[in-house]
Length: 213
Ligand SMILES: Cc1cc2nc3c(=O)[nH]c(=O)nc-3n(C[C@H](O)[C@H](O)[C@H](O)COP(=O)(O)OP(=O)(O)OC[C@H]3O[C@@H](n4cnc5c(N)ncnc54)[C@H](O)[C@@H]3O)c2cc1C
Image (cartoon, rainbow, N blue to C red; front, side, top):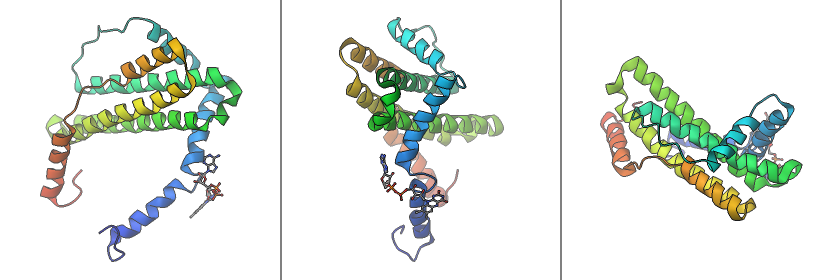
């Protein structure tokens, strides 16, 4: 239906392609994004160096198993905080390694940018579901929570892949082993039955016969 010009959705599919081109292509924006963050950090406008150092120190220490919260949103917030640590670890180590030549390492910048975007969308998603629960009550957001479960689970795996690829490209020996362990730790989330979750979400769409959320 999306391919046939007779249907209205075809136009929307065709138009959406421009989002990857105008106002800077996706590839160029990925490079700009990380470069801009590092530039602001070096100018002292944004403190990412201290958190990056704290993450490096955390990696040297023993993992903290003290926090045993079972609160749904607290667990999601912790996962997202860990995604940010993964970004700081990879981008911080790459910045130290390549210094002002980092802009030549486009694939590493792309990996860090993809990690940033996934973390941003996860956090926005989580905050919206949390807000909906406060407004409408927990029984009204069961499906949204399932969607969030699926998204965070998928995102954790995607972030791990981008981070591992970057680390494997520039680190060696003990440093590499330490960072790969860090990537595993910072992207660890509970397993999700994504098949059952997606079926439940699809059932709701079929039942309503429209976009219901
Ligand atoms: C419908 C439309 C509306 C537009 N509106 C505006 C507007 O309002 N204002 C405005 O300023 N511009 C606008 N543009 C221009 C748009 O931003 C440019 O087309 C865009 O920046 C790409 O430049 P280019 O076409 O010269 O592609 P090129 O620079 O030739 O790039 C071709 C491809 O190679 C990739 N690429 C290029 N360099 C690199 C690199 N170093 N590393 C990795 N990949 C790279 C690009 O991402 C792209 O996929 C518009 C374009 C279109 C099609």
